[in-house]
Image (cartoon, rainbow, N blue to C red):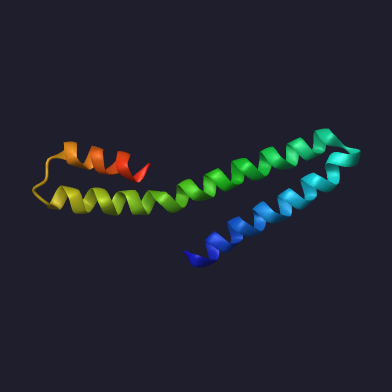
Length: 79
């Protein structure tokens, strides 16, 4: 999981540098690079969050807590 986070950070940095360089000559390509990088980063973050949310749901279902508390927990975590 650690290397995937570094890959996301690397993609973000490379896309930012590329977009800044392209913005001077081809602004439409800069926007396309930014959009593609944003979609990729959001996709990778969601794929990293799915096992975490699944694990939290498993823990909450095995406990005797009502599911309303789980909803409050997710809201407090900002998910």
